[in-house]
Image (cartoon, rainbow, N blue to C red):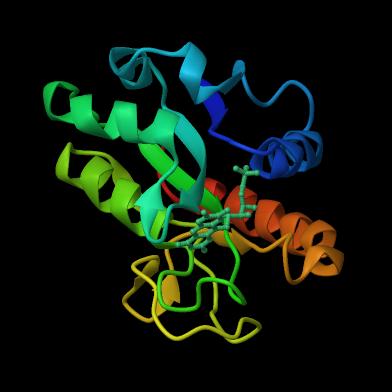
Length: 173
Ligand SMILES: Cc1cc2nc3c(=O)[nH]c(=O)nc-3n(C[C@H](O)[C@H](O)[C@H](O)COP(=O)(O)O)c2cc1C
C-alpha cells in the first residue's frame, strides 16, 4: 500500500503530532511524509492511503496550505484513495468552531471519491459546543488539542494509530 502522511501547520503543533503519528506507524509505513505546502493537489491521487493533518485557523477556517489544496480539489479524482484525518485545535479558545477544518476537508475529499470512515473517534473527552469535525456523532478523525490538553496527545496518538491499523486490516485493499 502506497501511503502518505501530509500535514499543514502554522505554529508547528500539527507537525509535532505528525511526527508522533509517523513514529507510531513505523518509519517505513509512509512512502511520503511531507508538509502539504510542498505538494501539488494532483499529487494526492497517486496514494492508496493518505493521513491528513489539518489544524483549524481563523475561527473555523482551514489552515492556509490545506485551503490552497481544498480550492483545487475539484480537478482531482480521489477514487480508490482511503483517507484518515487528524486535527489540531483549541477547544477552550474556539469552542464553537472546534476542529472545523477536518470536517471541511474530509467532506470535500469524499465528494472527490475518496473512501472515509477510518479513524473516527468519540467526542466525550473534549469540552466544546459545536464542530464541523463531528460527522454522524463522532469526530471524523483524531482530534488533538495541544493548547488545552497537551498531556493527552501522546496516548491519543497511540490509541488512534492502533485503531487505524486495525481498521485498515479489516477493509479490503
Ligand atoms: C487566530 C486563531 C484562530 C484559531 N481558530 C481556531 C478554531 O476556529 N478552531 C480550533 O479548534 N482552533 C483554532 N485555533 C487554534 C489552533 O488550531 C491551534 O493553536 C493549533 O494547535 C495550531 O496548529 P499548528 O501549530 O499546527 O498551526 C486558532 C488559533 C488562532 C491563533
